[in-house]
Length: 289
Image (cartoon, rainbow, N blue to C red):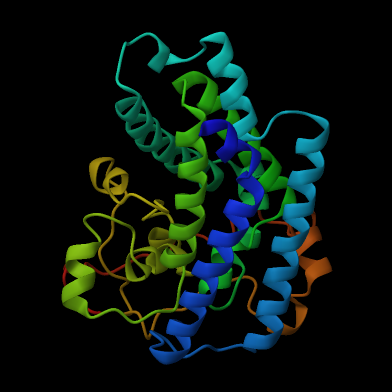
């Protein structure tokens, strides 16, 4: 079964991506959370072109070197590498623990991409989007994707994650990244409960605020627990979801945000950490929505 899943990983991931993207894109159009400020056609064209380019880069590297997470998991499993191989756990328990541990690794990676200036240069391509919808979840610089692939593969070896768990995690992460970035209006009562189990759009949108104190919160893509446990959780943006500004304060001209501009952005912007911290008034956790 695992051999079949590994052999069919690309179509499985593509099929899930297209299904979730189509569903969320449709729901966004029917029940949008915010009015978009820039041309949706141009933004989607740029963001999806960047996604396609990233896919070509990843597949090209994976064809030359077995550094993709699933291939690394197969090699590590054959050699007995990783913490989970120390314990004689049932297969299902190892897979479940591996998914949770990999999600923690992605959370730590995300925090580091904000904290380390050289990594922030790459990651700000994701944050330079002036709107927030399903395509934002796939908008990353190719070099960040390559680095992320290496970090994820190292985590897979350290954890000793089974192949099936790695593929399940990547499919899940891809789906929840699109969901958490979607411009979907959820009833507040549902959002309040759901964000205890998965990162919701309202929870993650705070992370895309132009205000740095809000941008450096809510790092989770999939599981919301790490932000709560490690002190990086923020319930709501100060200006409310309709009033908050999305993106980076220094980069507000939509006309300059072309695909070539996104590719050179990490090497052209003089300030690695963007705007200086801005003082914020206290906000009650269940306040403005």
